[in-house]
Image (cartoon, rainbow, N blue to C red; front, side, top):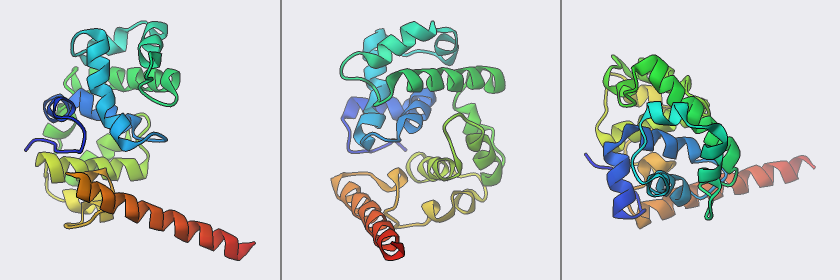
Length: 194
């Protein structure tokens, strides 16, 4: 099952077959538009001239990697910090999964184990980890026993609450509308307390 996000075909193709690229995209998916985060791995490949391995990123000169992330347009709003976090992610993949990023999920025996592994990644808090488990299940067919339960409400069928549910412009609009409704509710709750 290939990933089908409303980013260009080249970015989707990379995310579908390169586990490290997908992990970096999800890592970068904060404080930037989702389209920027999920096209950033493609831009990183273009800037480097090849697809980096986890070993290469783990050993990259930190300042040089920060410079690559900072080239305009920057790969993230906080390019230096995200370059460093991507490097920590790559080192974890090398140390824990022998440099095979996909082994993070291909060797998980259950949804609970998969969630635990994803939660151990840098920059993957509880919510992001659950969203990533849902993304793997819904878009890549990675469905160890209990994956929906591990993903919580993000694993629900026919939901439009996260990147796991985005497959085209229509679903993107539904997810954005959902997130706007959450922000409006939080704002109203905050105003009521004042």
